[in-house]
Amino acid sequence: MPLSNNDIFKKLRVALKLRDEDIVHICSLVDFKVTKSEIGAIFRSEDHPKYVECGDQFLRNFLNGLVIYKRGPMPKKEEKK
Image 1 (cartoon, rainbow, N blue to C red):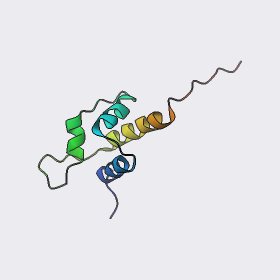
Image 2: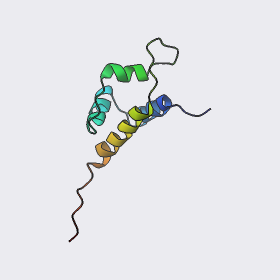
Image 3: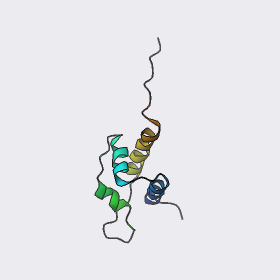
C-alpha cells in the first residue's frame, strides 16, 4: 500500500520534531498561508469527521518551505557580462 500525502507529512513532522508553529512558519517562507486548525485536521485519523486529506499543493509548498527553513534562501545569481 503506497503512502498518502498525509502519511508523508506525518512522518516528516515526527522525524524533524516539528510543532504546529514550526509548520506555520515553514509554510509562510513560501507565502503559503496555513492555520494551526488546518494542520490539526491533516494529522487526524482517517475515520475522524474533521479529517482533511493533504493535497499535493499543500505538501509541495511545505517541502519548498522546508528547503528554505533548513538551507536558507537561494542566493541571487549574478548577471554575466
